[in-house]
Amino acid sequence: MKVVTWNVRGICSPSKQYGMWKTIFNSEWDILCVVEHKEHAKSGSSFHHKQYHVFYAGVNGGPYSGVMLIIRDSLKPVVVQRDVHGRFLVVEVNYEGKHIWVVGIYGSNVARHRMELWRCLNQVLLHGRSSFLLGDFNMCSEVGQSTSMHGLMDAPEREVWDLFMMDVVRYDAWTWINGNDVGYTFQSAQYR
Image 1 (spheres, one colour):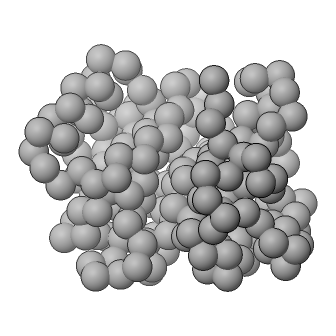
Image 2 (cartoon, rainbow, N blue to C red):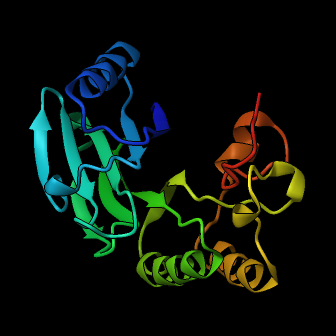
């Protein structure tokens, strides 16, 4: 299964939408989490495009830029929950007979807002199924990984994050794929 996260920083223009769909079809991705879609007029909507289902979360005029999940039809996607603030979107898929939750996440640049997000997701995911967490978390644990100080976790956020990881996250796919100990959640760092 090909799973991808893409921060598009806005997908409102037709040329950008065309380029995105061309890339999706050429790459044959199964699941794409698009963050910062900024298509707030489509918030809370879903539609079908060729062999994909498209699900939006976002708030018109809200502080977050939104999350969109694009999932191949063969995975039989069904929305489980949309965050009313547009910070996350949970969709269940059926992969090889296993029901898995795909969670698209867009974390704030503000630590206290991220802490609210982790607490909220902890409640949503604690009693859920196995999950893929995808998106732009806008945080990191070390100064050298951050592109700005806003993304650096402070001690209170680290405590909330560690509880979230302990309660919900059972498997670190980034470490497994790359064979290193860099957390897959720390998207501010530049990986080569």
